[in-house]
Length: 126
Image (cartoon, rainbow, N blue to C red; front, side, top):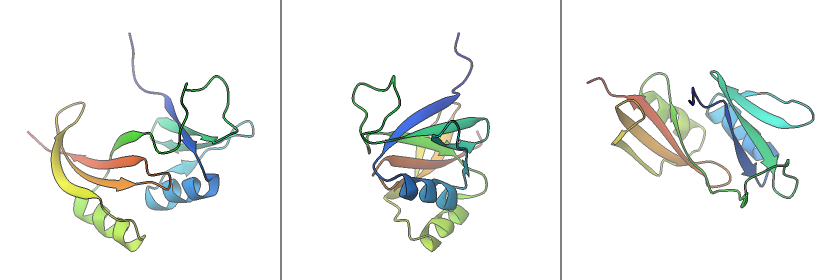
């Protein structure tokens, strides 16, 4: 039985741009290990593979820009939107109502440096 997600892997074209975006814009913490790069948030992490230098084993078609990720955020979407705009991040869509893993959410959509779709969401009380 699966308990929870421990980590996921993103293949990236520019390691520095990815680290900057996820730390400066999304507030994640760099978590390098064994000569590799990762990002930590809560009890999870994102391992980063540089395109052409991926760690094995890896996805069959490891490609920058192929991910669609949703993160639950602290605070309000209004504050998140202001923070994104202050950091020059274009909002692609939202706020829009969606369905998350545990119920209704309200989301903003942005793109990371590799054009992965990033959904930033808050839970909507029932």
